[in-house]
Each structure stands twice: as C-alpha cells, then as structure tokens.
Image: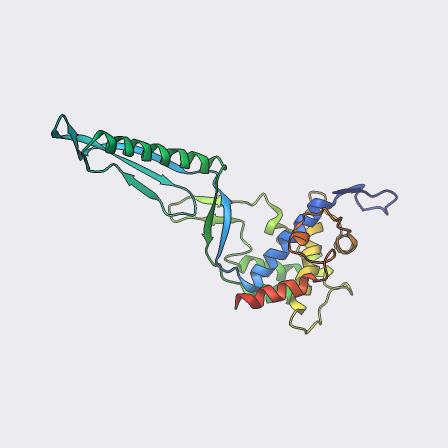
Length: 281
C-alpha cells in the first residue's frame, strides 16, 4: 500500500509508504497501551527459528542389552537433549534394560522421531503453542508523558522506564539483546520536542474525561509517533491526518482490520482498547 503524493506543499514526501506508516501506528499503539496497562500472560502460536539438539553416549551411563539369551552390560547409554526458546528442555534416555531386538528397534524409532520433530520445529515447518509471561505496566511513565510540556520532561520519563522504553535487554549469564537500531521506542527520546508540540494540536483529546479517554490519547500519540518513526519522518499533523483519512479496502489484512476495528468496522480503536483492558481485570 503506497501512495504518490503529487503537488504536495513543500516538506511532505513525494512518495509515502502507507503500509509502513500503518504498521508503525500499530506498534506505537501497543507500546503505549503496555506502558499504561501492562501485558497479561497469554498463549500464542509461534514457529521456532533456533534450538539446541544434543545426542550423547556417556561412558559412565550403563545399559543392559539381551543378546544370545544373555544380558550384556555396555557403556554409552544414549541421551537426547532438546531445547527451543520459550519451552522447558526435553530429555529422552535410552531404556536401561533392553531385552529384545524389538525393544532396541523401538528405541531407535523413538530417537529418530525426536530428531525429526526437532528439525521440523526449528525449520518453521511446525507451529507450537507457548506461554508468554505477563509483563507489568509502567503507569507512572505513561502519566509523566501525558503531563510533559518540554522535551527534557519527555526524556526524563523515558530514562526512568525499566521495562517498556528500553532498547537493550541484559541477561543473567552476561549476554544481551540490543535493538537500539529500531525506531521503537528510540524515536520517542529523539523526537521528544515534536512529541510535546503535537499535544498542542486541537485534535489531541487532552481533556477527554471518559473511561476511554486515555485510549483516544494513545491513538493520537501513536499516529504522531508513526510519522516520526519513518526513515524519512513526516510531520505529526500530516501523519495524524493521513492515518485518519486512510481507506482500507475489503481485502485489507492490517492490524486494524484483523481486529475488526474502524474504519472498516463500527468499533473504534479507543473502545476496543478500553474493552480489552477491562477484560484483563
């Protein structure tokens, strides 16, 4: 979904990727909602992309195999260890006593099945259900962002976040995951001044006291940040206007249409987010 913007006033892009702008809006909506309300534990379908498979025969591990009517002790009892992110590791061991060729074949079939299942999983050929743990809100950060009148106040709130406004995750083993290259949430810090100025626009629902009022503010600010997060940023007012007037065709499969939210459906985003938050309680 892209739109050439001919005869636009100076400062607007000659070509705007509407799909990317819409995707960015959804990411900021979720980020601001998580700041305000947190994220509950959920079961999600996913595909693995990595994992660990170890097949070992330890000399100290003994097994007993029937051969020629006699039970023979042998070293090197097989153990298969598999692990994929988000799941408890699985350990499968060769039976300690194997009394017939059929039992040995059964073990070989089981070992091969474990191997095949693991390969299908890490190659993405097989989906699995995993439990994503709950993550708490940082409501005080959200409230500080709403109150902020200066870029310094926005950046101060940003730096106080320990969960949602971070671009790096450190792990106990010394490893880390860094996504500072991503505009989410980095652009909130970089574009703090534009963020504050956008709240002076008459379209910002600053005084909406309804239970769903905060979610109207989230929608507006997500649209602001969506435009500022593009590789060639557009002004907050233009971003808000483009997303407000954007038409979604019947074949649209964006995050709004998947959730049956306006403009294609009667339910507006603020009400959808408010009802979702109520269901978390």
